[in-house]
Image (cartoon, rainbow, N blue to C red; front, side):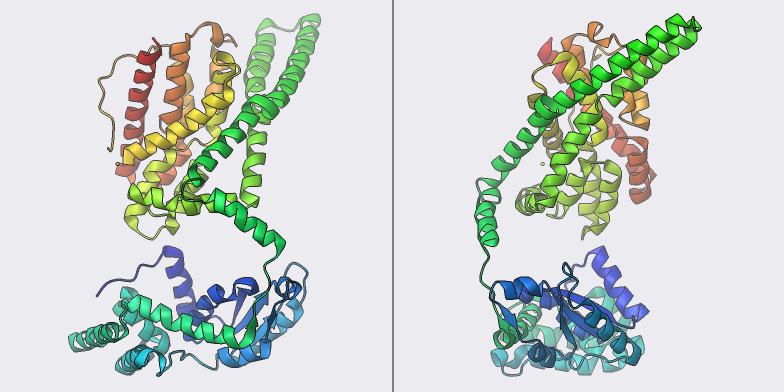
Length: 526
């Protein structure tokens, strides 16, 4: 039998309902998208758990000329249905009362059977009922609702099959029943079960739902979506939007705020320097305060406006729903390099921090996708690398910050993709021109925390690094900082998820690629 693919969170959620036997479930349904949302409702009804359905955003439905026959829907579903508006706190008290009532008296759903013997010749109906009869004693022994178990076994759910411990004759019978249903219905088993549920949902909606008119906001949103998620326009729009965000961050808004903060830090440093000199403070202490605190910590602090500005734009993109659309249109591209469409979520989180990005891979459906995504997330430039980028861009490439930062972000993505279609680069290594112990020390400190690279460089070079490195050396160091191993916290999270060997292999692999790319950059600029 073909195994049904379930994600980890689906398995955890389902096992909780089956094993923990919750007293009641409040199932919140989006009343604006009721056809799609009722699918989960039907699966929960099959699990025979006391439940109340909350129709949320009913104010929007009625406000746009729509209506829902709540009593009629209750009769067809066999559970209480309560209209609410969570945003306006309407109907919530009534919902809670219903939930408490069904939990106290353990009022189970009035129906779990949604197949119709007259639909499509009754093939699905006969199959479900035959399988339910076949496994009835097993379902009782496992304390699993027989209707739910029957549909899951037909779909090929290996986890349920393992619990039931069917003998070979029963397994053969299950296979014959399923094959016969597929032949009669003309669909594979999963599609046939899904179609059965959606057919019942259509009947509910035909009898109880008057669809609302599309609001002006929704029409406007759809027009924008046609451009932002279009087949030929989605990726160019994404690159253009990210380039604009980075340009405004590093060349306009962020740069202006950074200049103000740097001026303030310089003025404060000069005042403290004058005061310490007037007080005849010990020279060592004087140097520690001025060259250590103000030159080191102050230089890192000056990058704060840049980071805050970038986070402001990213939060706007997240709140507007654009990031979700990015995940949608990137699905095809990711599948071409062997990743699940869900991988984009982890990769996008990687632009913030590698640690939660690695942890987010736990939701991926296959172990292979999970491992590949974990190995690729460090190529996404996390926010801890921003101070490195900002420092070198301002020192060596003034006026081109937006372009260079965009190139670095895209470069990380491209290298990550290439590391996935070729595996690794195999150039001949030569020294990169970075044989200064102070640079090496700063990169080692970067392994602990990427933002410490800049402060270490500032302290060790006493704020004069711009006059000690060539442009080629700076570019080489910048590329290496982009690609080399993530911080120790990220490596630890990979170790926890995939083990010691994989974590060590990832570190060696990334350092190797970083070394090669930095060497090539040096040759180009020499």
